[in-house]
Image 1: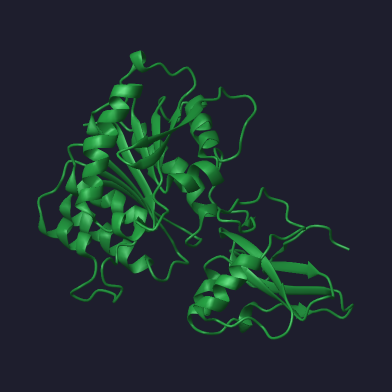
Image 2: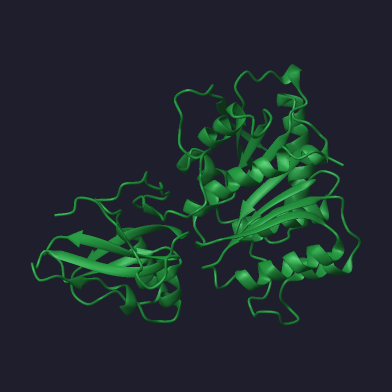
Length: 373
């Protein structure tokens, strides 16, 4: 019997694809739902989870399901054994599934931690998925230190590189939105230390701004008051306390989803403070989810209509993100037309920290190591 999962086989019809089989062992349930991040979500939004229900095998103890995925796919995933009827697709039912779903006990890759008491996720990385050389903790690199602070009523964790002394500044600055996820759950300090040790980024003061509370929808929605707080309170404080630099060309603001939108907005609204925006799966549809109508894509429309700011962008979005792909491509086209300095890439994955943690490292390296004009 195989003791690892998923099982990956070549697709005889196309070498660019793989047949990926997930398994669950245990006959004490009435069914098993596979939660392949964003892939399962798409069908849940369509009201049909049937394509993700595992089949019971002839031994009565094993359940399995096979997906045909492109060889560069990466996704977090969980399994949800259930009793009785299969889970419904309502928001209430889906939240209950997410609360109960568990990692694959036979997985082989390091798991993706979760917050708020939920179980971690397993991670699938097919052979051609982008390399993520910086995300795992290494024992042979100098370690920085992370300090907890409160600034202007906001929780901010500060990661200082190994050997940091404020008097040795100015240091480049990276500001990460949703900092409690990056710090407490995902241990981004390991990534930062690895990047620094390899010379991929210079020693950098990193500000992990906590934004995952009830204020998040207000803060991360092209809100000038929030961006001004970061620019006029947080950055000057970091300069005074830790020798953080004030040059916008050495300052990166990074975010995912609504945070990706906010990172781009910060560069638009305060380019004299935020010279680099790292936008992962940005919610550029804001404020209207109706694709391409007159109320959608406010920020993209502003960037198209107004003078080019002296800022750089690093943008990525997942090919599985059906709800964001078109809007990110539209932003790419506008930045091209307006002559912005930017990097853009599409990864074969979804709205997923399993993808974002590698992209964050790549984006920081791309923005912080590039020569300034």
